[in-house]
Image 1 (tube, rainbow, N blue to C red):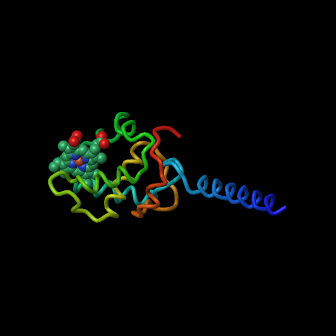
Image 2: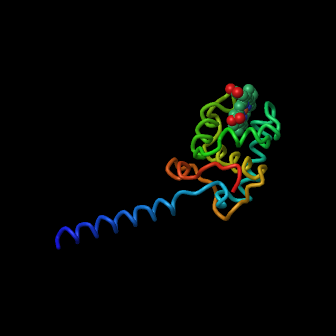
Image 3: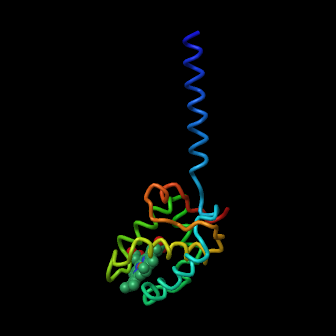
Length: 132
Ligand code: HEC
């Protein structure tokens, strides 16, 4: 009897655990940035990135392909650590998030109601996928 109850508790906990993971893991296709944020990102891109980059650098299939399956956190941290190349880390974390929102939009990935924030734990749970 005790053992059965124990097993029941364990399997219930497992189910709940799986449900929580399924709920919190998302992809970039789940409306993870807002339209207003992408517009801000476009301005930041023009001001801080466009002197070295063209929009095509980030719409070419090779761009998202290179990040396929990675969490948005990896892209966020790379950009924050290394860009603008002549002054890395010089923008606010929110500015980097805005530019990433802009990158999603120019790849025809739809906006949602919430902004992409700069929280490491949140960004870790959003997967980059070229296709839905
Ligand atoms: C002074 C020039 C310069 C500026 C300004 C600059 N970049 Fe870059 N960026 C580069 C170069 C050069 C590379 C290629 C580096 C490499 O291949 O190792 C690069 C690479 C990148 C990559 C990697 C591309 C990939 O295929 O994964 C990203 C993302 C990126 N830049 C984003 C940005 C963003 C966002 C900004 C503005 C905040 C920015 N860069 C500003 C020069 C610059």
